[in-house]
Length: 213
Figure 1 (spheres, rainbow, N blue to C red):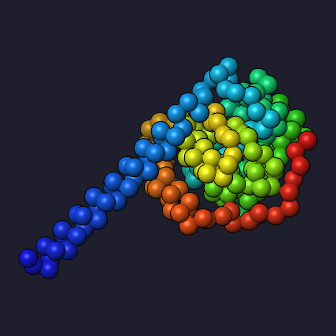
Figure 2 (cartoon, one colour):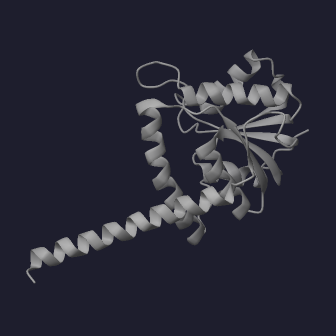
Figure 3 (tube, rainbow, N blue to C red):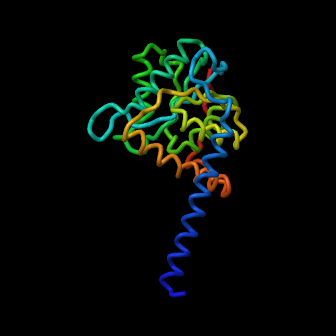
């Protein structure tokens, strides 16, 4: 067998293994979230705190990010229905010019939620950081996670790995080409979940505890 053929064969084998790993990661995370995701405020269990997973408010073209818009709407629905009493917005504030939590806070207040019911987590750089910090910083071991369904599935799996009782309230999803790109990235993110767990990856920052009251 020529060296070229051996390289091709090895490449095909490696590709098959990667596809299998991605498929299994997706299957495990989806199966684990069964009966833990809710799409109506009537059906979702009541929790003291809702954890909103951050995202950028505007796309590069200046248009509103629909993932952001729908998470705002979902959070307001949960609060006004009495299914959560407090809100933690966890997102990226890595530079002075990029501040996901404050954008969310402004729009949640504009939607009628009192400012003193909203807590900001500026170090939610990744989903893992957000779910771990909700326990280690904010003292919550039971939470309603608010994001799109595919994101909630992954967040719930991570939360349970850190002994957090979590359910997900699914914000409206996004279709079309932009939605497809996000979904494809999600497959890789789900694979990384198991690497993070295997290597006991921790949040980038922890810090002082914040009491929710």
